[in-house]
Length: 430
Image (tube, rainbow, N blue to C red):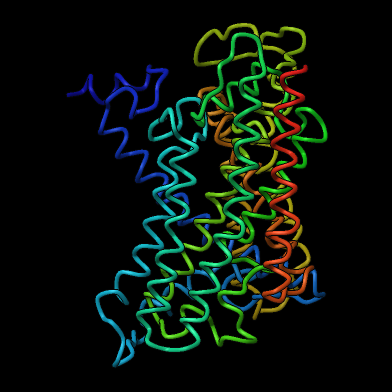
């Protein structure tokens, strides 16, 4: 039994490929916990970033700089009265939020946070992700229909029309990226998520720069489509509060409403993970093929092999990132008013900064430093995509529904077809 548990640590495969169901379960639990924490962090960051874009402070009362506000909101939703309309279809009303959450989290089974950091690797991984992520709209339609109310039904119908309009353009962009995996010596193309990243490493180029500007245009098509697919501003027509109260989840409250909230942010992270995997090199660090002159790094645990200077420099980035965040916290502590009312806030922010600094020190330990490189770079790229969601929300006004349809069918679809055709032509002629 002990060998079954520890033997996988030396494996070069994912738990699913190795047939180790214990580690597969551990990975699933870690991913579920990690995504849930990421949703909490995203909630706080979105409110603070939008506040600073609008020259205000955002949440400040609960915890230092409002750090505990998402936890307070979660507790409020858990104890809030859960109401179901009297004429609603009770079974479907219950199943709708569960369907959306299950679809959003199932996507992460094949997300490769590293060459071995995934639950499993499928030879049709990208098809699996696109297929499962598209099932979320079924939960939205179920919610709108089961509520037995006009506004939720209109929001559900909008969502289905929006999905059909942008799913095609998204698929064309994905096919363009898959085509790029076959344009290298001895390659036959792959739909494996890990294989797509390995193809970018073998070709020494992220696909966003492949056949420039075709790779960039394919990424643009996918980026616009993924905002529409997740019903985020400026394409949040299914829940347009200025027109439909709250859209498809108007009749939901309490815990069941929070499941829609959780699923929306998990879906945002999921499609961002697809974009990172297909076009931004997945877990690969910037310039992964550049290693620099070999150096020997002092190591108290074991004698290390010679390490490239560039590899060593990039391996320090995770720790440095946490040190910078800790420094920003301490700067905030320094700027806190010296007043008794702010004592708890000051101590809390200082404690948070100390925790970040401790994490940075842990990330300097060679075994930890080497093990988390893949996860850090993948997460950093996903974080950039998540910032774009916030940026779009704070910048662009909401589209009218006819504008949404016009953009999807008369611009995105022809652009996706053109990029796919030109990618095939240029790849054959290259």
